[in-house]
Length: 80
Ligand SMILES: [Zn+2]
Image (cartoon, rainbow, N blue to C red; front, side, top):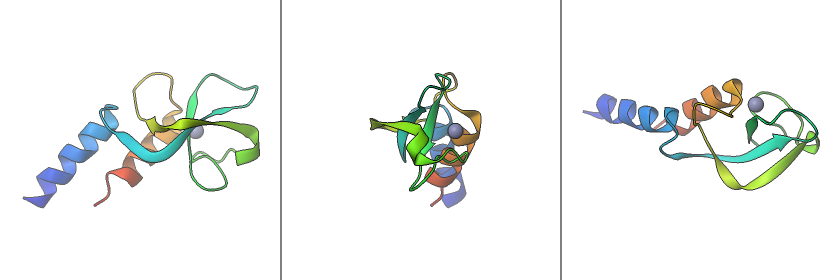
């Protein structure tokens, strides 16, 4: 039942139980929200030069995370 498996994976990512495939970062001098970094910008569109990149992966916990990045990271990471 592949669809059920996919749903379960999405659920785990959405609740921050599994790290996504994106690096975590913080907007330099900005808010304390964590963003998910793709190549040249965060998933919500902040350029890489404006963020401080962490060494850990972005985890989509419900608090302290940019909601845009959370939705997009979960979506991308839970895709089969
Ligand atoms: Zn963001």
